[in-house]
Length: 303
Ligand SMILES: Cc1cc2nc3c(=O)[nH]c(=O)nc-3n(C[C@H](O)[C@H](O)[C@H](O)COP(=O)(O)OP(=O)(O)OC[C@H]3O[C@@H](n4cnc5c(N)ncnc54)[C@H](O)[C@@H]3O)c2cc1C
Image 1 (cartoon, rainbow, N blue to C red):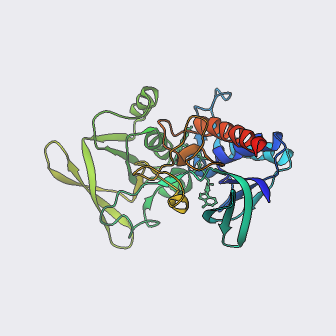
Image 2 (cartoon, rainbow, N blue to C red):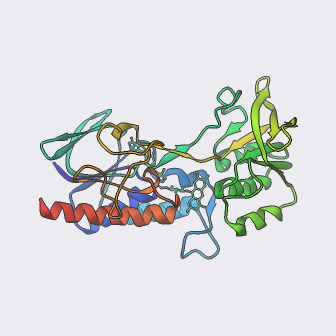
Image 3 (cartoon, rainbow, N blue to C red):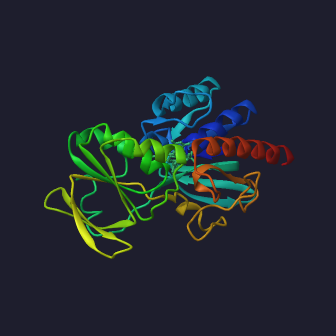
């Protein structure tokens, strides 16, 4: 029986692990892939305090991991499939077995949202991508489109412009959710062309992406852009399917917590991109990871 099982080793889970280890809890971290989470989809991070020049995401995550290692807490490769409440304890089911814990922190983050348009699934991996860092180098001197208007879309458009001949940035409005400083920076990149008030309706090609059909939402006029890549950054879907039967989640699947990160069952806490909140960033995921571990510690003291 563990005191605490932390599910997910992104920024939220890794921070919860640091705090749990310092509280000297008997804790484990379960991660289904490799540690680090979504931020590794981006090459660098510029808004994490303490790094005025920005820092490579690999380096930042390596530092998180080293801190966890130094405290002697191991990250186990486990894909959590279900959590069940059994006599005040939790039964965590993974592909390789069942694990019991007195408290649980869910830090399973989110995955990028799909557009749900014709050609998107067919051409994923054949020109359609959700990760600039991973696939950018494959598009040297090619024309590509980037879809989205938030920080992620603009950051990746700038990164991709370093490889591509032309980046067409397609956004459904003429204002951006992204921060003003990032919008200005993007406007200063000569090979990024803005196509605003427009949506991508279809992705076409033979074996690989060859063009996209876009629609101007004001004029309703359709046109085509010839491109070899389509990078989609239009939001996230929380990884919470495995808890939907035991926890309160909102209509989009985000876990509902209070300010101390308590979920709707005693002894279950949630943090990071899997919870309903207003800011989906590394800094907030870390803050919530720390709070969740503190709340779990206080809960365990009362048992
Ligand atoms: C392209 C891109 C650029 C970004 N740029 C920035 C930026 O510049 N600044 C910034 O602050 N934020 C940025 N973000 C957002 C940031 O990455 C997230 O807010 C942050 O990673 C959330 O951390 P998290 O730990 O909550 O979740 P995640 O990072 O999503 O980590 C969750 C972890 O849980 C694991 N997991 C999921 N389900 C299970 C399961 N059932 N069992 C076991 N493990 C599981 C996943 O494999 C993953 O490793 C960016 C995100 C993207 C995609």
